[in-house]
Image (cartoon, rainbow, N blue to C red):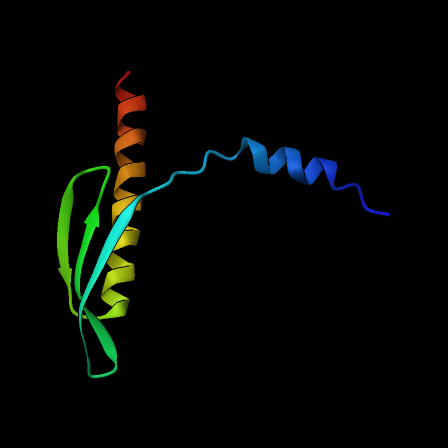
Length: 76
């Protein structure tokens, strides 16, 4: 039998960043979505032309937040 306690302890130590995004789908053309995404924590909005671009925008927002935190800890 495997010991899963060590796995759960490892997962608890990982600092997970969360983001709240409001997605407004305005059109569905050419087999994909177009609309607007709002990043609630930063009160910032961006328009997107495809579902792939939507995911890329959200990924960049979360990656950018992680970079800001790294810079802050380095300067402190």
